[in-house]
Length: 151
Image (tube, rainbow, N blue to C red; front, top):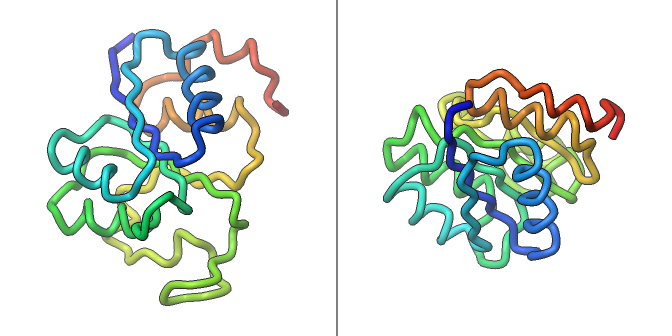
């Protein structure tokens, strides 16, 4: 299986560690990087974009996950990172240009190109880990079947 890089953008260390543990179990050859702020995610991605980004919407600084996507698009990123958006804020935005609509609809059509999938916490690990394979443009490994589809 191809070696991929994934950047986890999550300001809660416990959540980031859990995500990383599951990724290491299913994709042991992947390189995992962490950052807890939107500004850090933008800097890392513009400098050397990972193949996949797991991106929380609510972050520790004044740059939220959707703004990270917008800034990556503005900087010219088109092919990668492929973003898997996660949030505990529910599926309806309470701010942005379209309050009350799904979070991903706060992005314009071009910016949505970077988004591979959206998950509302808590999410099922099987579906989440399968979405990472989709984002990385690889087939999910057989090992994924060790995690029940409803988990």
